[in-house]
Length: 268
Image (cartoon, rainbow, N blue to C red; front, side, top):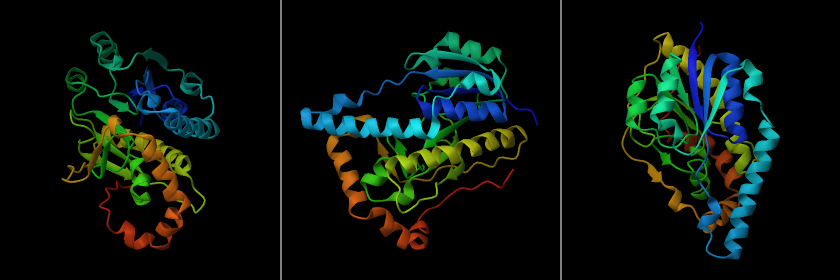
């Protein structure tokens, strides 16, 4: 089945890689790359905190380069790409350009908050890839905070229909990575992205075929915002790894995973 999609994403290697994977599996008519506005060093209060935060994000960038490389979106299938500033996907002119492409479905990964006019233009056919298990972890840094809180079982991704809330739309599927004893934080995050990209393409096909049965989100969970991020949280996360968080989880994985309510979709 040919499925025509528009992809709304960002500019980091993980975003380009996912867009290229989608272009290899689907008819991608256009890709909008929205620049990120998050500046993590602004949350540093002194030189030591600046060093801690800088080292954390340098390690993330190195890990992404190793996992995803310098991906050329156009090389996968040749979709038009549009680079826009933070929030630029909401610009009326950009929304009009997306509409003219007449996509069957719009796929979102890594943009800022999308507003009503864009959501209304594609009502009922916007699928979002949220890094984090909703509703347990919503908002920003949702695969970072489970590790700060010593809960690696909550690392994952949620594919859901987009609404105007923050990661609150009906859930199509939860995706979780394989967790290995020697994993660090960026291994877990990048392995999640690889697994979720495949499932996002499958969800788009299932949506067009009318085979999706999304589950409304239940109450509870935690909402983190950018302002919650700090150098002390980075330190705490590394302390959790150093004190055996991953082996501890793996030793009791069955019991700990049983606490999770997960949404699965049948194989395509």
